[in-house]
Image (cartoon, rainbow, N blue to C red; front, side):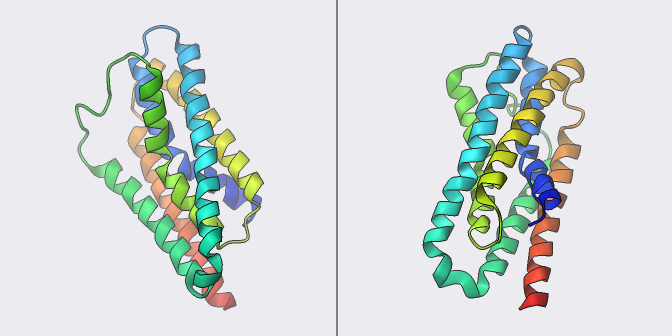
Length: 188
């Protein structure tokens, strides 16, 4: 996977975290920078750890599923992308944005919830030629930066960009999954 594709993948995987951070930024009334650092740190770490866990799980079973690994990578990325698109186009939940306080429990739960997609992406890494540590660090850093900026933007202008971020993220993940499938089918 090229560095550019890896960066785009990191941005795509970060879209959920960006959208949630944007919503939390809208709710923050005080200590915005502190809140942004807490949210971005938790989201960045979770997004970096989950692909590593996914890779470990995938590596354990890689030899048994090598003949159809490209289909698995495609299916996972396409499913994640489709889920993001589905969420972008469904009606907003009034309860989706919790109260304006930031508890450690809430941040942890949000970090885990937004990083489930990264677990599946990490699983696909086991079947691809991906520099794992570069991918993990890239995903974590991109998520940290985007989440930090999203909290600040959310605090300033609201959730205007939530849906476009989810749409772009979904399309990017489906595109990368399709590219992986085509490369393996043409090469194999």
